[in-house]
Image: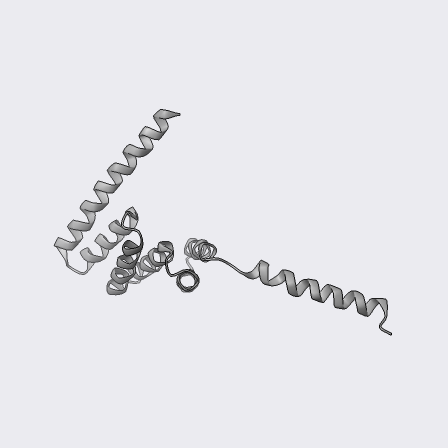
Length: 140
């Protein structure tokens, strides 16, 4: 017959097996936030892995692609940045910062017309967002 200690240990292990996977299971936004944290500490390798994990967890999360594009811009891999930002904008065409960052990538690649077009979209959306925020504040 098993001892009380053995039964207690088995119960504890059983509980841990049920609880730990829930604690460790990050969602896409958690990985995105982790990536931002790595950027703050200038650990760009880890940031890239976290943004990729965000994408793997949810391919429809524009933040993961945006973060990945930012890392590519920082590393001067503008063709990869362009791809990431285009996916971001395919998911969310109103992602204001993605338009600006894509414009920057185009500018660095010497594609002036595309760059200006993205900057113009950025300015238009930013103006609308600023007006919306102003209206919201006035209503309060």
